[in-house]
Image (cartoon, rainbow, N blue to C red; front, side, top):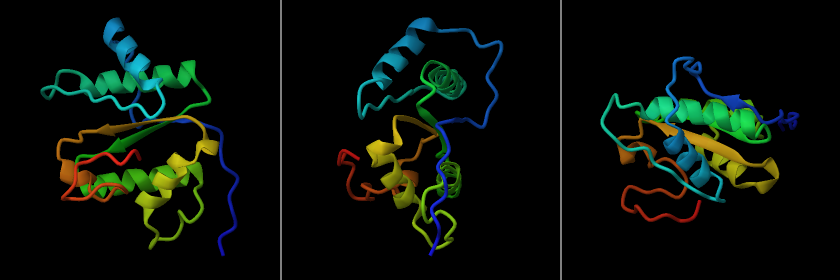
Length: 152
């Protein structure tokens, strides 16, 4: 049986450097931040490729980490199922979720359950390049036939 690992302190896991030349779009960043502070909130940045959605998300992640150091910040590559799974494996490793070393474990369920556990604190999770909803179908609460939100 796997021994529980000591969980780390909340951290910011963004695989990109902060852009020192980022032009603050104050109002937009403020709106994102404000909407993200509500419990169980979701915010979608939608627009054509190249308009700066990912840069806004990156800047928001770093600002969240600075302004709320008790908040976990995770970045998930959601462009395809393999990258999604790899990102979830990295999250499971980062937070030391029990069972994460088992290659047969359902990493989506492990991370989902960890995120739902209020004892683990606040978190921000960015799904980057989530252009195809079917890529998200392995996530708990999703199915290829249902797009309803189950509150997860």
